[in-house]
Length: 158
Image (cartoon, rainbow, N blue to C red; front, side, top):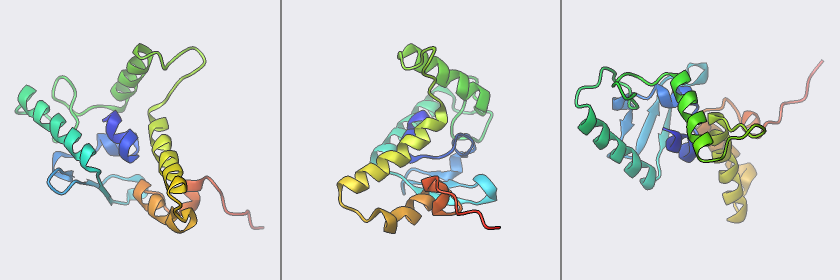
């Protein structure tokens, strides 16, 4: 799940809310139904992400052929993963990896931000007209408009 967030940028709640029938491994496509503001969107996947999700799905089926949840990601007891469980696991992983210290506290949401920044850097290095592509990134991330992607707020009008 953390790899999916890092590679494609969904919000934690969107990743947790993915149902098995919304992850199309044949087409390499996610359908995010429970997005912010009630908006749904399609998220195309890179083939390596599709492969990793397929490997996870196979392992999940081997370990738990009949999960008690229809969510794509399940806990060790075959139920839906809750946000607090995801945060706890992420905190433990980042501590074990030496990434979390008293002064550095990575968050799951940082994976989403890193995805967006990496995309912009890659576009810049490739000579892509970033202004022309910003709406694409904004839509992909599920933002209402590109201003939400860039962090720039429209000027206040009196």
